[in-house]
Image (tube, rainbow, N blue to C red; front, side, top):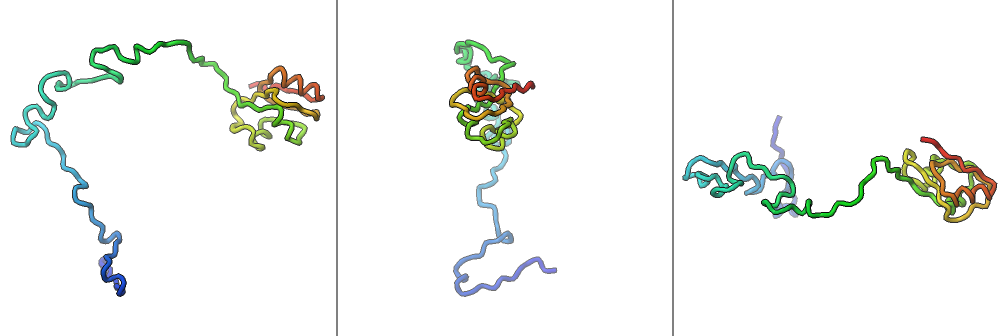
Length: 165
């Protein structure tokens, strides 16, 4: 088998050179040589091996932690620390009553809300808030309800069912 390909050039291709995988070359300077350290003064990187002279950075085993400021009190320690983040915090996906009023179904649950695009994740908790009003009797299944939302649903003749996780 012949590995070289013969290419016929037309008159328009005479001046232009074809580019393909067979004639690609690495550009000059793309691969830089390794810097050999501590191999004598004639190497250009002898004696101190590009570390300068004396000090913490010239020693073996030097280590700085993130935020080290050379003995000065680090900015992280100067910042005030207030409050806390609860491990047990629950994050809800919020749906208002005005959005529920647009749905023509009688039973509304997280699967239906996901299908209608009102929530993004079926696995997360859903809370119904009382912004808007409901005219038709509907059964709403959610993880939590605001007082106003549950009152509005009951006033319309519907049921607000709490889903236990």
